[in-house]
Image (cartoon, rainbow, N blue to C red; front, side, top):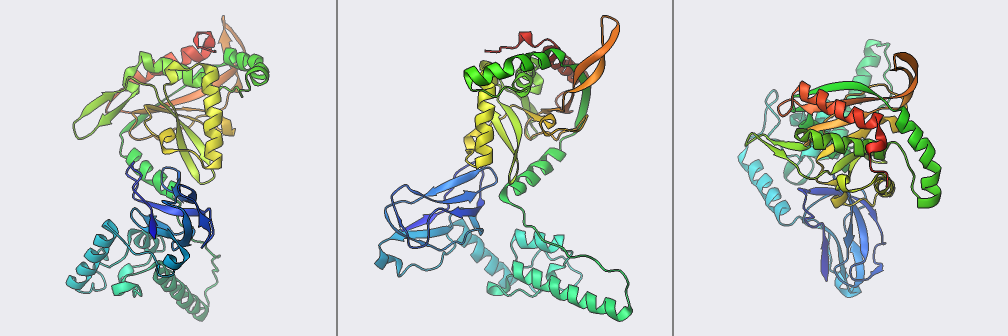
Length: 409
């Protein structure tokens, strides 16, 4: 009988959530058959069976698991009779024993003192904080007095009932509506962590408008041809990527990251453009690798393939890593004029574009109607200054306004 564990898949991933079991309890499975999908903060990964046999599932769908945890067993029917519930292993065991030892040594925390020594996992502490509950006042019903999520919710419900009785007694007129607690998905947890890292960057933004009339005409002229002849959905985004790459080649400090500990700028000689993509479970950043070596048509095709994978939740970790610069195209969602995007840590800068719209532009001294693309460059002020941001913006703007310089095919 073999164990099916949530193994270390790299990228600093330490936990996940069982999104879906692809087999049923006690089904027959084959070696290397995908039996479960686990959502991590990077992507959804498939868990294979180590051998052929019958499977006994011990971790429930929707439950959180850590690296090393047992998800299921696989073996003969006789072997599976002796299989028990999943037990913590490796680091999980050490952590559990450490918590038990800590609880034995630490005296009870009195009211008014910090609740940091209360035995409870971070997710439970976060829930208590979000509900405004002092965790030191919650009686833990878990092993060795461990405070569980149910303990927090029961305490909250009891408090609400008591508060309601008090309100009725005092004749309170205000009636609050019901609430719903939504636990963060692994993706939203990752977004929260990345936003916290991003917020630590001292940033500034440069905004400008580009006359995108020529770009608008090219896309309008080539769109149907690209679809019919090349089976490619052509949009403005591939041109925006190519224009950004050209601007990065002329302004290399924007294609970089910053090492805070060593106080060094890491200039990147490759152009991996991250794209903010809306997914069912939250924002993801997919990466068009080596964008400088690809044509507009090749980039358009790759964007479409990556978008489909995001929607189908089949995107791989490799397809979401190693950005050198990021673009968020708010215009694809419609609405908005100018936006200030958050830097995708550890990048140095991010380009935000909004919807191309009809606006007056000046040509040859006359005001005429034109297609205008508003854009924002948000940058790490430790690495680049405002003057450099203007130069980058002007480079990008130049290629948008004269897109014939961009490699179409």
